[in-house]
Image 1 (cartoon, helix red, strand yellow):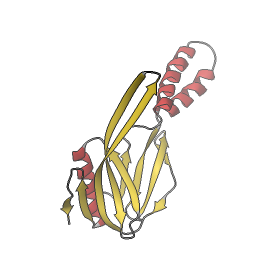
Image 2: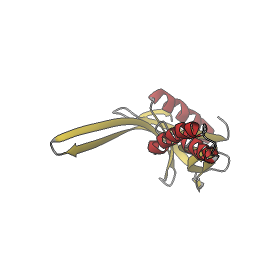
Image 3: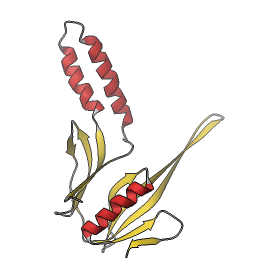
Image 4: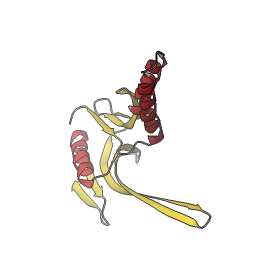
Length: 164
């Protein structure tokens, strides 16, 4: 693993902005047939919205982490230092959202596999979210090796120390 770890979120939290960007791209293409130059500005803005990303970036050399928001491939976010890592934790996060209007109700469930870095002072640092357990375990194994830390797989009912 390199000195930097970058993981793009599997689900962008602000998907409505990406959709707005795609709609504006279509509108700006339609406007391009007119003689107005407004479509160029609109197209630039639309591509920016359509290229929005978010995720986690870790710098192993400087022991710092940030959650980022990216546009046009550039990433913004505040770097936060983390202390010496005791172990890397892989766990399952179950999210359930219930919605109801009048007599109509629905439940939306989602499962993510998350990675956290746990420090000797019990601080927790987010290191990303995955849809696949295999991808999460592979990434966490590489992180544990890079940080010379233990690895705990807590995705099943019992704890499983993969590197102990």
